[in-house]
Image (cartoon, rainbow, N blue to C red; front, side):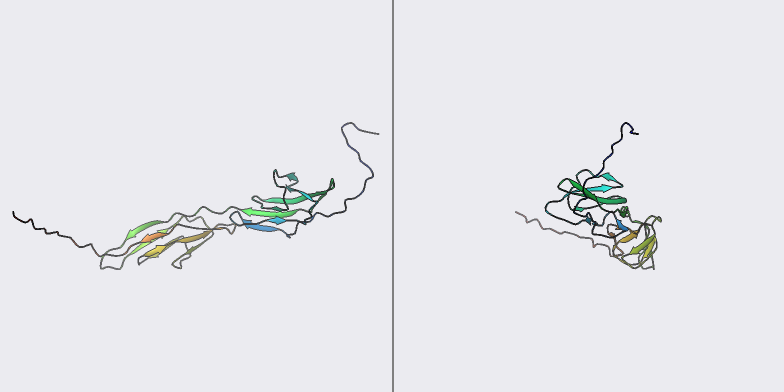
Length: 183
């Protein structure tokens, strides 16, 4: 019994080449990392990378740089004979936006004083250039401070430097005296 709209093939020969991704998985990386997948090569091969079984437009080289999570495979054709590799699982975690440092407090001349630098308290870890490991850092001296934060996916981002000036020296007043010669 035959059914309409079905294709049935019988016979034929097997392809003589293999399709293999060189990396082993699963692979976990941050979007800011330069991760790539490569496969076996031959001058007579043509390549088509796939994500979750769907062709990736333009991904026709022997190397591919994944930018999203999923199962990747490569279809390698030689003389019209296609072979598909096994899937490799790739998880791409987002990189957090660099945190913006805010400050509170002020330095008071001739007194022990400090400024507190802070970033949002929604990251997994914090690493301040001054050594602190929380979402805020108490500063007691001048300097340029930054913080590297890590999200729950293990991806890190570093703030722009935040400059603190604890100097209390007032600029001197300048008096300019001039002489007008009499004619």
